Image (cartoon, rainbow, N blue to C red; front, side, top):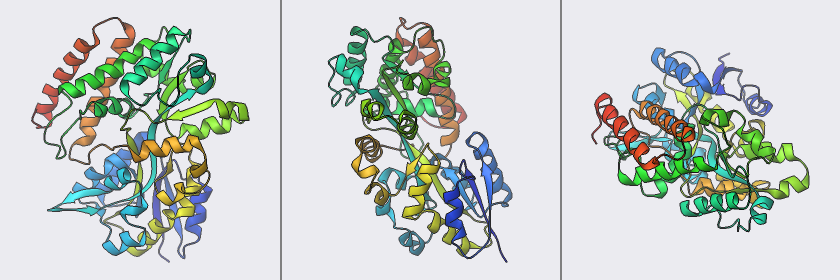
Length: 399
């Protein structure tokens, strides 16, 4: 009997995943991938047209796989059978669409979503006389909150996580977007990150280095234990993955800890990312593959999966209409960030562009942490201008 082959990133051991596949009338096998090298493995699958029938992919990877001709699009009937656009967060649905000729086709089914949120200790803000409902709504309010915490005697007001991947760029995106800036235009043909609005966003984001843990010379050094420092209440406010909420609620455990933990959307819009399910063009059993995607994306399965993998939430809106998401203010803040959030553009060469921009932001943070008193606007301007010149040449993109 024919067998379905599925590759998953960080979910291969999930019992909920296996339970869903066990309900289907065909055997299956799961390939285990890890985020650090998943893109390279997926690119090889697409290149050699051999391997899994269905794969979990990062949202920003789809365009490269589609343009290589290795992904099978979903038909209108298949899309409708899984709920269509209205079943998912709008930002996530946009990641499933890639231009094809004069229109866009659906090449993936949104599955799991993550965003960036601000975690804070409510009692620490209260002791500093800060209203938590307005502490993080705008960029100036974030800066004011940090200053007031420092003035009230809080040693480390701010922490941030930026280890690996494009995390540094994802964190900075809220600051750039909030000022009306961007990174590339909608077609991916013109650089925008060297415009004044984007430079102001990068610079104001970098100013928060003044409120980071003392004697830290690298943002990656902070990233090693940023979550731990916050959990120990040695950091008052931290920006991090929305999925960390699971960790804090489960590790804290005690009602007094849960009640003191606050979650807020960052200055809008927040970065929204996650993963989707694709069917490969080389899949020999396309209908089996569609059935598997439909089963894995059903309401009760994604709800269970979000408990198995603590870094992500369901991309389906109907799951958020029920407890625990619908009646817990912690989750309401996550939903707000996702609903108001944005994704990176699905355009050619984005992967290389994102990697270079992320490296630049890490270098900026490290330089700023080493000498917080320097002129940050000049520092950002010099780095951005240099990278823009190089990318315009290497990627053939206009400025």
